[in-house]
Image (tube, rainbow, N blue to C red; front, top):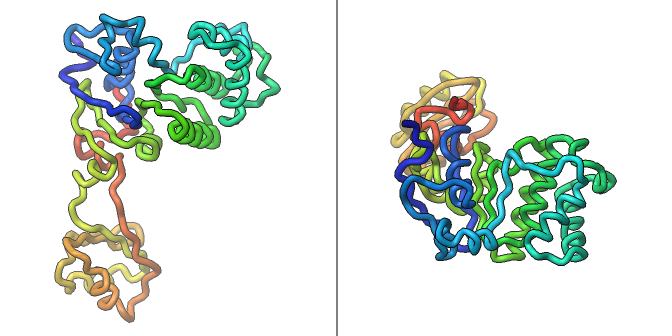
Length: 297
């Protein structure tokens, strides 16, 4: 029997943005659907602001909204008609809902000339912007964002990310973001869970997770004198694990020895010394043995 989710325990704090990072197929969307009351787990318990997701499903639905990568609409209706319909389901005043919808759409770069065109004529990216607007329209206490920027161009991604930050400042909203986009998760989330094959293999802030793969300071020296710089570094006490690659000499150290290194390199030709920081990609590879760019079947 295949298990999409197995043995997960997590506690998302009110008002934080919590990220779930992992491959497509690792269980992220299944987790989001369970919290959204769309799937029932074989066992376990899920509570949203103290309410049991399954025993109090109607009450939970009033507190949440969800933006999904596979957003569905009435395709022959316009953005305006779809958004007003969604707002009325939550008991919102139509005039207030339309005013708010237009403000959100403009903020995330939606071309308002298309506002009254059928959604079926929109690109994948524009449809996703309407879905994002629908998710924020009802001012939920918990917003579940399941791959919210998939299909968006880089400019649109930044606009949506800026909007997510701004909405969090204005409202006491809790956000749960699932994604395989490590840069997006790193930029937006207070804490991050890394999922692999239906399990959470690590959890913490971005900085806490990165410390799992790099305890020492790490630097790279850009130089045309690779051999000479390499030999010079070997004589500096505290320099560890020296490597040469692509016109760079990379080394680690357990203590702040950069002044000694610069002094030792006096007279040699080097362009710059850069600090090398680990990424969430490095963390994921360390914990799972796979790159985030490798897609699971």
